[in-house]
Image (cartoon, rainbow, N blue to C red; front, side, top):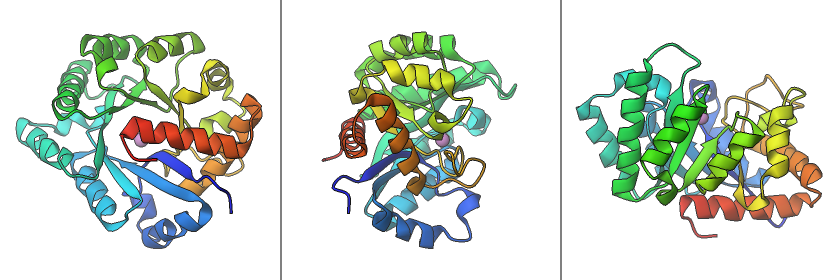
Amino acid sequence: MQQFEIFDTHAHYDDHAFDEDREALIGSLKAAGVGRVVNIGSTVASCAECLALAERYDFIYAAIGVHPSETAELTEERFETLREQCLDPKCVAVGEIGLDYYWPEPSAEIQKKWFIRQLQLARELKKPVVIHSRDACRDTLEILRGEHAEELGGVIHCYSYSAETAREYLDLGFFFGIGGVLTFKNGRKLKETVELLPMDRIVIETDSPYLAPVPNRGKRNDSRNLAYVVRELAAMKGISEEEVRRVTWENACRLYGLEK
Ligand code: NI
């Protein structure tokens, strides 16, 4: 048995892809060396499911927030529900929140409004943030700086921008969520970023059920597949897999304010 376990910092086990075997799968994670998982909210309804999972399993924690592509459903009333959900003792972060301009809807105005509101909620509740940003690099940085996100701390989940831009996110003190894309043949841009990232800023994540690493690319992802990401990181950084598990575990605990 390996000494250090895997911390999956970003998963969606509430997703319908897990409806048929959720219980069996989650029940198998610990034996497979997965010690902790943060299940990430994306809609108002999914946040309730995140908390239910976190209540049921001691090693699962929750992040509460509405994904940028889902922000059209937010109202002041639903925002109040989010605030109450964030008060749950197993809620470790606000997220995933951010900007996604890949899809035309909802409008940038709507996305920005609720991104800022959720950052302010994180500040009020003293929680770190889980950031989703796609095709919106400049606007995301501008809002994070404007809201002094460096005082909140957090993670850029599934980082997809250039190695140069990574320095700007590093300056904000953020962690980088690294997952299956690192193993993809077309993952060169991410490899360039990871080469310049110090190990103390890297956490690992699946985004399950999405983005399964090679050799399971295209299949449903789950936290056990992080072993392939650990292997790739170890090879790239010239350290042992054990060291990758240890450092990313400690980073994840720092990110989410959990005991080691
Ligand atoms: Ni996600």
